Image 1 (cartoon, rainbow, N blue to C red):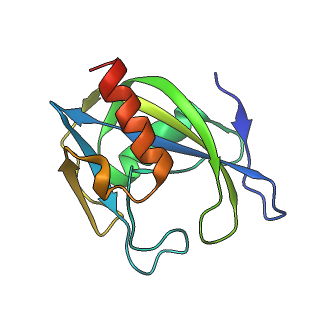
Image 2 (tube, rainbow, N blue to C red; image 1 turned 45 degrees about the vertical axis):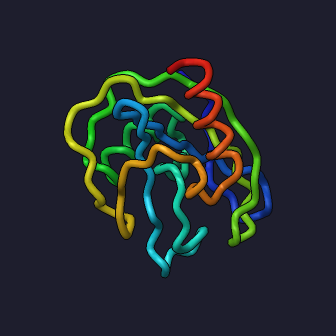
Length: 139
């Protein structure tokens, strides 16, 4: 079981997970809705906050089900980073490569989800670096 986090409003680190899915050389991204509180309208990897009392792995499964309608069967932790989105929260973001899942990804919460083969459209630098790392080391 992974470390547990809770959301805070007092400028402490907030646990966030991101799921990475590949289809051949392409990876799945989401375009966030323009009215989102956090990073509105950007193209990024799907994911979300770790809820109070929830492990990172539990959060990943919940977020992928809520956002993409998929059931995560297997995932591998890749790396973490720290960044501050536009709303000022300090995110500790954990990236997972999803290696087995059920269902077909759909956009349940984002403006759109789609497959890319080039990292240039990803708007968060660490998302780009993580995809490049996976492509060079695992793929």
